[in-house]
Length: 113
Image (tube, rainbow, N blue to C red; front, top):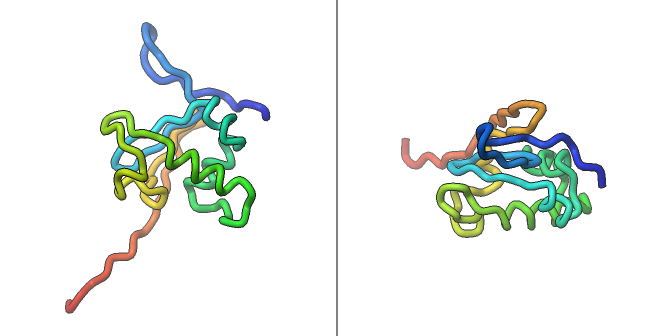
């Protein structure tokens, strides 16, 4: 599997190279080795985060496993631990190529309005 360009986060004294970062109410980082271990590419994972990867695609299970294994950089919680971190709440993806804003609508049940 070919690795895509890496995103460098940090400053000139201390930095970290990641394949991509994404946010819900928390920020999650994905390393190239995590993508490799889950046998998916950055593009496949971004499609998963956008909701464009079919559940019938062979990469879907790997992408879901990767998503559930991530821990937020501030809370140290995974999506399994916190419902606010689910894939349908991903709002932004950051790669070396730029920032992708995901506009997702949430259904809100209105009672007796």
